Length: 169
Image 1 (tube, rainbow, N blue to C red):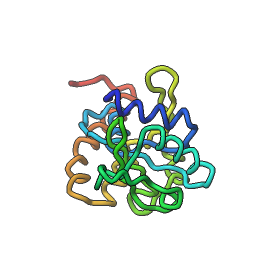
Image 2 (image 1 turned 45 degrees about the vertical axis):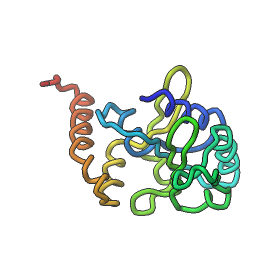
Image 3 (image 1 turned 120 degrees about the vertical axis):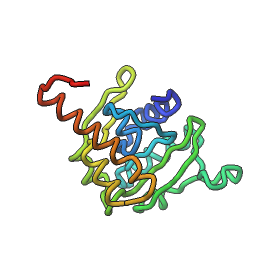
């Protein structure tokens, strides 16, 4: 994974933000050979967690990507809702999502995520491939649908390895 995206994950983890990594980076962290340029997270929307998220976003100079020159920053009120916040940080793009797919928020996704340790002692929650696939199918966008075959093949390979079958490749 790109070091700058890892830096955003470390900042979120250091601030003790409750979040799950979803999307392409979530798939990559599980061995899927996918290429993506942005980090997608779904965050818990409690006031305490939003306060920690705001601190993390401030520390990486997060602004909305649509007009970065205007330096518009997300508000706690906006982050409390189910919407998507497409941000640019000094470490690269960060998409902070209230919900994904058909309205799946952190509270639901947490149960379908696993903790992964990154570079040293940084632990992050990552949505399982089955659920990354499910939410992309629910959205049905062109970009989402284009990655489904690769995600499904990675999931099949993951299940094959988990069952102890020999790798035929």
